[in-house]
Length: 604
View (spheres, rainbow, N blue to C red):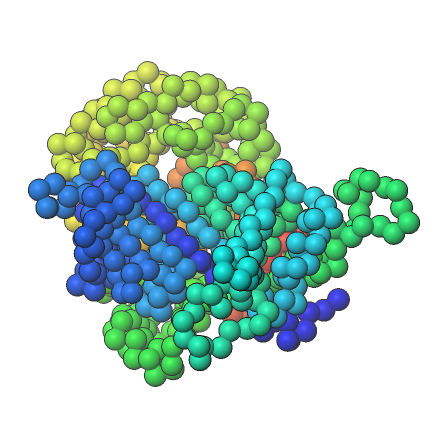
């Protein structure tokens, strides 16, 4: 049954809570570099909370930054800096910044950031689909199935006249990492709002899903690739709960065979067509234009000039909601000059000869991954040609499963290479880490095919970091190892890699494989390949894979292309020498369209 336009207008989604901790940075750096807010807009409070002895608030006090002080001076310790954005705080923050960009930054920081909680919400302003009384009735009649093994109901009443003040239902334990909360929002607002002139909907039910700890981390990783909050909630609800329709004149007690309730089916099946968007605080057009002109106008002008007036990238940027980290503007001219040269070279090579790029798949086995020989064999059967094994980190950690993983790769006829995760902050530390890595490599009996990778993905790449990277490389060369690659995150790049002395650059960028940076031959495009929590990269130049004699996956040169695992709209367009806009137009697709393995696309 189709959802009407009226229903579309009554549902709205939002990120309603965000809470995280940042380590190894001062609270001033967290405010200015992570939140990208002005520290003068914050007001200190008289005392801290949650074990922190100091805190400061932003605006009306719905965004809090908690930290520790020693002798009234801020300090950096093991507790880090804790940030809390309440529902109102999220709305206020999004009126100036992007929550999606903030979540991307938190994921990019990896171990330097710890997500504590993310709440997602759907508001039904007319009780069309999400209706509190209907859900309560179904729960009381046990007309639902759920992975959650309990549900609770909480009613609040006035002590004077017994008037109902609030109604809330909880599915799942409130102490667990994920649970669902449904409540009468209209009743709550009537009790809270003091402004009698403010219009409150008579019918208003809110459904919230609370993600904590590891669930919050997994959600953030998913939201990097899927920014549709409505779709994320839909998938979560499908996983955890289903409201059903009791069959008439039947003694069948197996609820797994009961039909899904029509109202619940409508909500889940039609959540994408509803186009539920992240709720933002209302702003006038004049205010938005003024903000754009002040904040990003100069940067946009620089980019357009560097690309000779080309603005197709801007349409894609708007569609994806992808924003540029503010720190990148210190090297805008240098970076976009490189982008311009690379794009011209790519267009000439692809359009002039009508050749397409080949690629091999490259998997990573990190410190936290628990791969077995069976899983490596599965990757090989899926066409993965090589694995990068994280061997060491800093000056203390070593991979005790290195020999087992190496033999598994050999048995699966896959190449294997080794990676060091860098922690160094200066040249002396870089030398110590290089010696730690090099000495341990002696026991691995490397051959000439094996490449070594330095992983600096947790670092901001500035001129000082480049010097430390070169120092590390020089020590490795003294050990006799020549084949080296460098892995980094594109959003952390503040300078160029000129004279960095590494054979291959390996970029981590989940939005586009072509990072627009000279020397990049390998791109990590996902951290959840085939839903297996596997980090996967395209090795376009074959630095880690071509020695097998495999020329890469050769794409069909005809007018029709069959979608393969890992394909994206950008990749298909890029490898066939057309723009994403052309690909979308000739196939009747939009930027929101998802590709299916086996799907046929017209590419000319």
